[in-house]
Length: 231
Image 1 (spheres, rainbow, N blue to C red):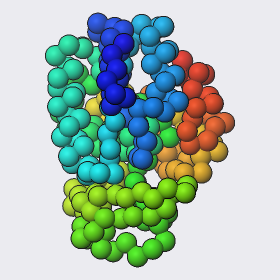
Image 2: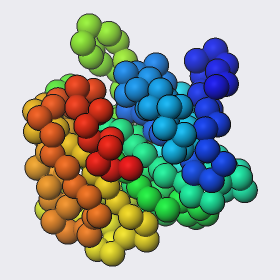
Image 3: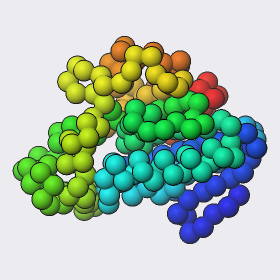
Image 4: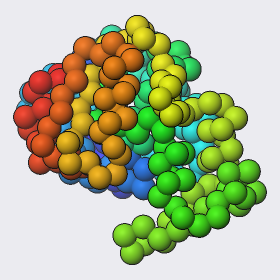
């Protein structure tokens, strides 16, 4: 296992298969889910594992996708099978990657309590006037669980201009027949991202596996059971 200042993890467990994991908004690679997956794959030897601190809120989606494409292209030279996994907002980024970027050796998309409409979720969550942020004129700053968080002034404008919202109202902007296999897990007690939005996505898009579990948004309590279903 290789670790450098908790900025990223790259565990070489397999010569043929790699799991690229994208954490959620305001999160990092120190979460419980990543800890479990690293240990699981280290024991199973089924996948090599890569996760990077993405700092989504400090940049914007197009720049994040640019970085991810470089990572995918580089790893495709070594691994014949890449699984792209996104948790929460990481699922938003991963799904948009499949929509808009070169797949290289990505064979499947795994989404864990995914966001399909991050901008709408933020707009619903923040009650203050956010028009200047939406126009790209200033950062968005608000309190979240006792902490002050800020989102780049380019974040919303980039989403609007490039059409990154996957679900808008009752419309799902994704191919009915996706170019890779899709597997999704969502918790029935998720109070952050409504499970109904994932159900809408699944009703419009052909997914290989869809699992609902008795868990909250973090999906930490049930990971040992659902991971064995989706890999």
